[in-house]
Structures are given as C-alpha cells and as structure tokens.
Length: 243
Image 1 (cartoon, one colour):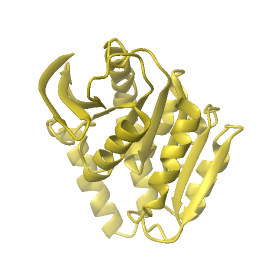
Image 2 (cartoon, helix red, strand yellow):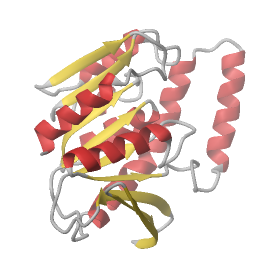
Image 3 (tube, helix red, strand yellow):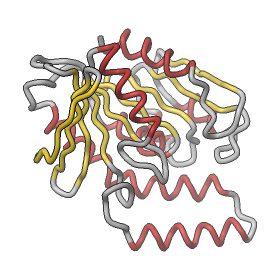
Image 4 (cartoon, one colour):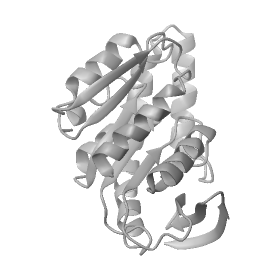
C-alpha cells in the first residue's frame, strides 16, 4: 500500500493511495491514533471513489461517528484504465436495449462479471487498511447502491469481517445466491419509480437476504433520487451496529 497524497480539512484527514493497480482513498478523523470502525463504500456505475454521494457520506461517517472510510475505483472507472472487454459488452448491451431487450438482465450480467474481480480486490484493501495504526482491526461495515449493490452483495456474502451493510437500487438477477448467504443486519434502499431496476426485482433481492434483521426503505422517485433523510438513517444504522 503506497500513499500518494494527504490533505486535511474540517477535522477529516484524506489520504489517496494505491494498492497494486487499485487507486483508493481513505478518510479518518484528524489525529486518529487508535482502532476504530471502518466502512468500505462502493460507488455507482460511471462514478468513482470520490463521487459526490460517496464523499458526502464518508465525511459524515468520519466527523459524526469517528469512523474510518475507504473507497476505491472499480475496474474501468475513475483513475483505472479502460477494459476492452467491458467496453465491448457495454456497446453490445446498448445495441440490445435499442433492439428491444430489457435493460435489467443485461446490467445484472455485467455486474456479476465485474464482481469476480472486485470481491478479492476489496478484501485485499480491507487487509491493508486494517494494518494501519490509525484504523486497526475494528468492526467493518459496507455501503453501496446501484453498481455498489451489485458488487456489494457478493462482497458482503464473502467477507466475514462485515458486520452490517447498507445496500439498494439493485435487483435479484445477479445476486440471489450471494444474498442468501448474507446474515448480517441490512438496511435496503428502494426507489419506487426506479427506471433502471424493476421494483419487483429489488423486492425479490430484499426477500432473498437471509439476514434476521433487515429493513426495507422504499421511497418515491427514480433511480438516482434517494432522499437526503436516508443519510441520517444510515448514520444511525452504522452507529448502532459498528459503534
């Protein structure tokens, strides 16, 4: 793990790093010196590790909860190089949608492909970050919606260090088997008028989760219109289960 820059503002220390070919960012409280909870955040499709929704939540987790937060660019996003195979699939999928095929199954297939790479990468990132003295091996949470849900469900299912997860804006097609292996508390976000993921598929994914404690937060609006109040709920959820 190699740190390439460090800045601080408003009580938050931000460190950009690379782990092999993976570019990432770590946020911690200024002056942090001891073990603390860590939240790994998965960004949405077409976004990156410092996308506005990721950055806003990360800073709130740090300043209000005292957590560490880490995010990395998934393959073909942010500071990572393009992947020829992914570009080819995206082009083919666009043509198939224009020809009348449903979008959701195509998204699910693509996310399942990317997850095979990201799950081991994210586990390696946890290994490296938890070795740092100002983070340590404390409890781990996961937050990810849309692409972050499609990649996050198999990650949470595979990673025993995760104690709680916020997921959502995702469907069951690529994730049913992995969802059935998730038993940690989950807060699941659903947009009732989602134009990208059919409501019935999101509800099926929620049903597939094996967690004894899971809550469904359904709000009116389209895919990218999660209400601001859900951030407050997320803060309370992680504080309860990680703090």
